[in-house]
Image (cartoon, rainbow, N blue to C red):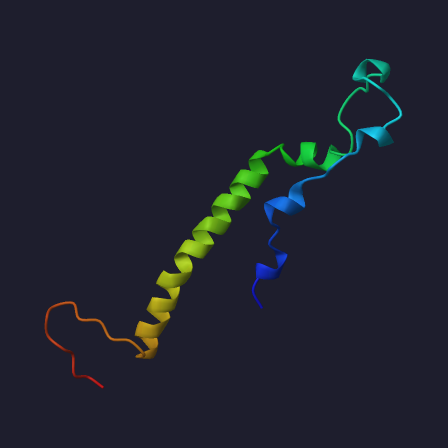
Amino acid sequence: MGIGHLEVGPEQLVKVCDPDELWFETTAEIEALEGTIGQERAISAQIVMGDHVDKAIDQRKYRSNLTEERLQEMIEEGTINTRTDGARRQDR
């Protein structure tokens, strides 16, 4: 199952607010708030520690070696043959 059903169109990203529903006339009537509202997790997620970088590098190395490891396994199993000198080896 794909993720196409999760796509959101631009028209769905707009929140329309009717000014008549607001209890104030201008923003001068609103008391200023300190900090960020409802974004604690997002703010903390922006902090990248050295351990995070090390883990990302290790995972990248692991993923990049998977193909090489699988090819080596296939060579050892005899599933794939390689020619190194231009002549085919006939030992099987």
